[in-house]
Image 1 (tube, rainbow, N blue to C red):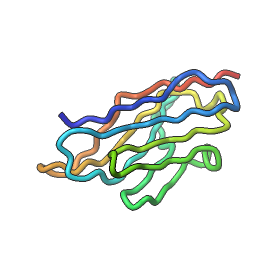
Image 2: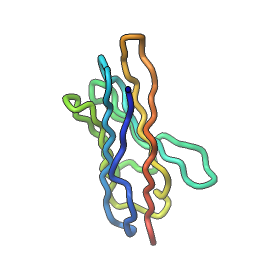
Image 3: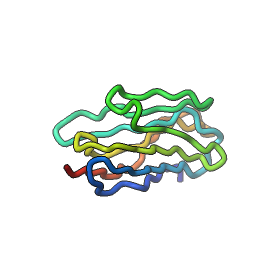
Length: 119
């Protein structure tokens, strides 16, 4: 069974840090672009950070300079290091990845992990 499994969310005070992880598992031929999205209460899901298979990154303006996305291709894992967290960073964070399977390339989502930043 192909899946993305996230970990690392939690409750942190403003100014603190958290690190999210997302591992792809199953019969995967390759993991292409990966990324992190978040959804705050009452808002649409938005892209936070993305990273291509070659390591090129992009970030939402609101997190530039504070968040770092990285990946370990040997482990099919993407990370999101979140520093200087603010209450507005609160939300459910979802991992997304384009996975190449025998039958083609598909976009998968993780189950989501809650990040809560208290002021």
